[in-house]
Length: 462
Image (cartoon, rainbow, N blue to C red):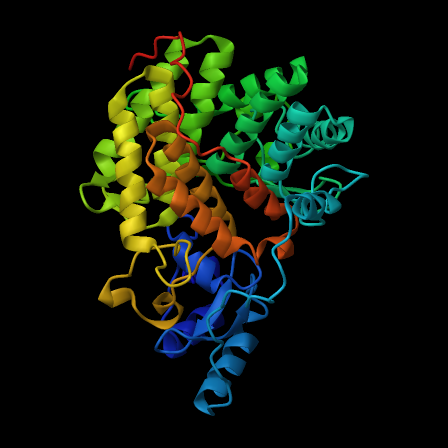
């Protein structure tokens, strides 16, 4: 909790006297976010001294906060509150695993046939279901899959979710029809959408998707990129006043400040997407910037035997090690950079990061990956004692391992991929549109192959 959020002196006094306020940035600590989020962010959680959750919810405004603080303090003093148990993975139902056809139905049953996209409000720009629709259309020619992709991409790319003035996508929309966007601009949201628009342009041969992808690249390079050292900043905060202005008015307004933190996993996704854009647009300089950005993150955040750190602050210091998504996203980015440059060093680094994840996060009993390595002793409190196995991150890890097996001929990677998917199989039918992560991973070929030849574009560092 940040006391500066509240101007009410009563709130400040109550917090100072009865509680120890702690503020956590969910982007910098996704492992804490995964364990303590209570319905979304911002979350206001009240904890016991040993880190258990007494209760809480999402944002609590200054008017309600004094009453909430009184009730929480009374409940704790009277021992009437019981800390919530850490979230556990759903038990195996004992039913046979769903088939590929079953899971495809699970994914597309969530398609919004009126407004495009998937699931209800708040509406997030989920890309995995669209990627699956594009893959199925490419392989089978099914026009229904093309319609799902086109309707979703058009609704997101030419509606309130997209900032037509500065460029870039907002985080999500509060309404199911994509109106009332939540105006944070996050790097991961934009690069995931960039990759999907590029794929749609190639699969559907639709010029407007190529043009929208180019617009997203311009946003990334104008607002988030570090033109000197490489890398992309993490986000811009919301600002309703600024984003309500027209193209003629905005130059006279102060734009939302950019958070210059470099997140490893998000930059890895950006490297992969921008390399694809550079190839599609024939832009060697853009490809060189992607390679330089990858090198910057590795030099600053990699430590032999300890993997990639999660983020690089504006002070130039890396922090938070041992997160699964960082290792696997960076491994994928290295595979893509190897494909683009032909430099075997990138493939070797991809293998190193995957081996580190297996060594420190693999569940020997149940299969699959925990979301992080064993935390330091000082962090083994409350829900941080628990090691979770996130569904989408495990499926994405299996996909990376399959790619590594195909690229290197190392069958141990293929075996880990199969075991990871086996561990996630019972969970997949309950994931709705996110089951697309499982289907895409299951369809990823892992047989050793020579791989695609490097691109003819000469990606030189700038």
